Length: 118
Image 1: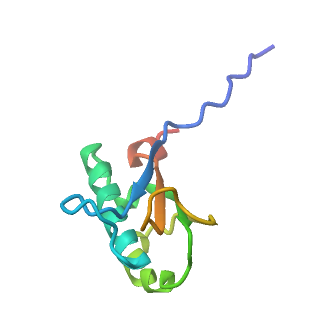
Image 2 (image 1 turned 180 degrees about the vertical axis):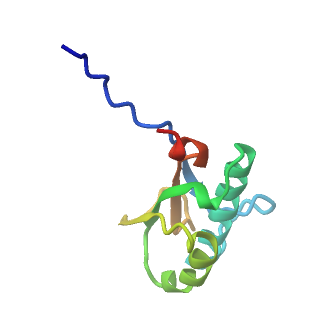
Protein backbone atom coordinates (compact mmCIF):
# COMPACT_ATOMS: atom_id res chain seq x y z
CA UNK A 1 0.00 0.00 0.00
CA UNK A 2 1.29 3.42 -0.94
CA UNK A 3 1.43 6.16 1.64
CA UNK A 4 -0.26 9.41 0.70
CA UNK A 5 1.84 12.49 1.16
CA UNK A 6 0.05 15.27 3.00
CA UNK A 7 -0.91 18.36 1.08
CA UNK A 8 1.46 21.21 1.84
CA UNK A 9 0.30 24.59 0.60
CA UNK A 10 3.05 26.77 -0.81
CA UNK A 11 4.39 29.44 1.54
CA UNK A 12 2.59 32.75 1.32
CA UNK A 13 3.79 36.18 2.25
CA UNK A 14 1.27 38.14 4.30
CA UNK A 15 1.68 41.86 4.74
CA UNK A 16 -0.83 43.19 7.22
CA UNK A 17 -1.80 46.45 8.86
CA UNK A 18 -0.85 48.64 5.91
CA UNK A 19 -2.23 52.08 6.57
CA UNK A 20 -2.15 55.35 4.69
CA UNK A 21 -0.32 57.33 7.34
CA UNK A 22 2.16 59.81 5.92
CA UNK A 23 5.59 58.86 7.32
CA UNK A 24 6.84 62.44 7.10
CA UNK A 25 3.95 64.13 8.90
CA UNK A 26 2.58 61.24 10.98
CA UNK A 27 -0.92 62.21 9.83
CA UNK A 28 -3.52 60.48 7.70
CA UNK A 29 -4.61 62.11 4.46
CA UNK A 30 -8.25 63.23 4.70
CA UNK A 31 -9.69 60.89 2.02
CA UNK A 32 -9.88 57.15 1.40
CA UNK A 33 -8.15 57.31 -2.00
CA UNK A 34 -5.02 59.00 -0.63
CA UNK A 35 -4.84 56.58 2.29
CA UNK A 36 -5.19 53.54 0.05
CA UNK A 37 -2.63 54.88 -2.42
CA UNK A 38 -0.15 55.41 0.43
CA UNK A 39 -0.86 52.00 2.00
CA UNK A 40 -0.40 50.26 -1.37
CA UNK A 41 2.86 52.13 -1.93
CA UNK A 42 4.20 50.83 1.40
CA UNK A 43 2.92 47.33 0.64
CA UNK A 44 4.50 47.21 -2.81
CA UNK A 45 7.79 48.43 -1.30
CA UNK A 46 7.61 45.64 1.28
CA UNK A 47 7.03 43.11 -1.50
CA UNK A 48 9.97 44.49 -3.48
CA UNK A 49 12.28 43.97 -0.49
CA UNK A 50 11.29 40.30 -0.67
CA UNK A 51 11.91 40.10 -4.42
CA UNK A 52 8.25 40.27 -5.41
CA UNK A 53 5.95 42.66 -7.26
CA UNK A 54 2.25 43.47 -7.34
CA UNK A 55 1.91 40.64 -9.86
CA UNK A 56 2.65 38.16 -7.03
CA UNK A 57 -0.34 39.34 -4.96
CA UNK A 58 -3.04 36.66 -4.85
CA UNK A 59 -5.42 38.35 -2.40
CA UNK A 60 -5.98 41.88 -1.19
CA UNK A 61 -8.18 42.75 1.77
CA UNK A 62 -9.50 46.28 2.18
CA UNK A 63 -10.73 47.19 5.63
CA UNK A 64 -12.66 50.45 5.47
CA UNK A 65 -14.63 52.55 7.91
CA UNK A 66 -16.41 54.26 5.01
CA UNK A 67 -16.81 53.59 1.32
CA UNK A 68 -17.21 57.18 0.14
CA UNK A 69 -14.52 57.74 -2.48
CA UNK A 70 -13.47 54.09 -2.72
CA UNK A 71 -14.59 53.91 -6.36
CA UNK A 72 -11.89 56.50 -7.18
CA UNK A 73 -9.36 53.75 -6.33
CA UNK A 74 -10.42 51.47 -9.20
CA UNK A 75 -8.06 52.93 -11.85
CA UNK A 76 -5.16 52.69 -9.38
CA UNK A 77 -6.03 49.08 -8.54
CA UNK A 78 -6.37 48.23 -12.22
CA UNK A 79 -2.94 49.72 -12.95
CA UNK A 80 -1.32 47.73 -10.14
CA UNK A 81 -3.22 44.45 -10.28
CA UNK A 82 -5.08 44.40 -13.60
CA UNK A 83 -3.04 41.61 -15.13
CA UNK A 84 -3.30 39.20 -12.21
CA UNK A 85 -6.67 40.25 -10.75
CA UNK A 86 -6.12 39.04 -7.17
CA UNK A 87 -9.07 37.92 -5.09
CA UNK A 88 -10.42 40.95 -3.27
CA UNK A 89 -12.27 41.24 0.00
CA UNK A 90 -13.89 44.42 1.28
CA UNK A 91 -14.54 44.52 5.01
CA UNK A 92 -16.36 47.35 6.72
CA UNK A 93 -15.67 48.36 10.30
CA UNK A 94 -17.48 50.97 12.35
CA UNK A 95 -14.26 52.85 13.11
CA UNK A 96 -10.52 52.52 13.64
CA UNK A 97 -8.81 53.18 16.95
CA UNK A 98 -6.50 55.78 15.39
CA UNK A 99 -8.20 59.13 14.69
CA UNK A 100 -8.26 59.98 10.97
CA UNK A 101 -7.68 56.43 9.77
CA UNK A 102 -10.18 55.40 7.11
CA UNK A 103 -8.53 52.32 5.61
CA UNK A 104 -6.21 49.42 6.21
CA UNK A 105 -4.94 46.88 3.69
CA UNK A 106 -3.67 43.34 3.85
CA UNK A 107 -1.74 41.81 0.95
CA UNK A 108 -1.22 38.09 0.48
CA UNK A 109 1.38 37.14 -2.09
CA UNK A 110 2.75 33.94 -3.49
CA UNK A 111 6.18 34.12 -5.09
CA UNK A 112 5.86 33.24 -8.77
CA UNK A 113 8.50 30.52 -8.63
CA UNK A 114 6.51 28.85 -5.83
CA UNK A 115 3.31 28.99 -7.87
CA UNK A 116 4.89 27.16 -10.82
CA UNK A 117 6.65 24.44 -8.81
CA UNK A 118 4.53 21.33 -8.62
